[in-house]
Length: 278
Image 1 (spheres, helix red, strand yellow):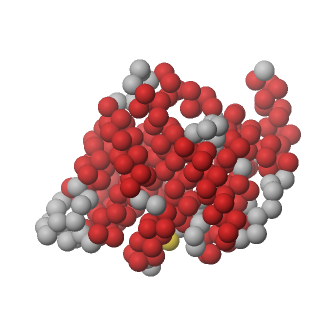
Image 2: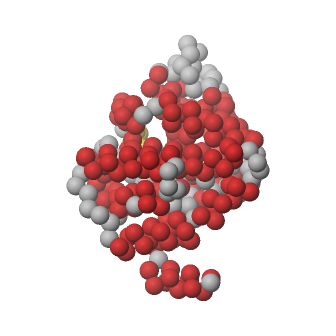
């Protein structure tokens, strides 16, 4: 079984410092003579790296982004690349998840990001979570970290507003929501598994999934997908309404601090920081 996210945070940083290592994986992604599974492995390594926000500046360099886009677009099975239909779809899925984590934190944009937004929407509209879960089980991929994905949906509003300052093209403004939709799709896929649901319960994250519909923009596709996620989750396990403390923390996360800081910081300290800022 292949575990997609097994690298510790410190290892992520050291890998980015070793740019030759990264360039080797980029070369592997572009090499049509290597087995297709190695392309999937290369993208999964970049997913691991993206867990650490300190890596995003490097992973968002134009040549890295372009390499990922090219690999994504060339993922269709051909006699030359030995790709199975399942591996082809999963490579696109990993690419979408990777780019959603990277794009959600960007403040400077290029036309590459418009292309990414289009690719994300095409993927989300084409595949449903049941298909993707079946493929994930077939290929033997598993997950054990979830905060990096949930982080995207809890980006503070000031980060979302930067999308509106990136030109008149509405696709710039839509990119943030496409990132959130992609990550909600990720949770629809992975929370089909009993093991994964237990991990999220143990990590104290299920309540923050339940809170998603209340913190996402009303009437948005992302909010509706979040409602569908909670409904799906309710069919698999007995859900309880989040506590008032969790609901307050979810609102603080999306408005001011982001998810990781809210998870680690005492409530009194968070409130004190708000009052000081005012």
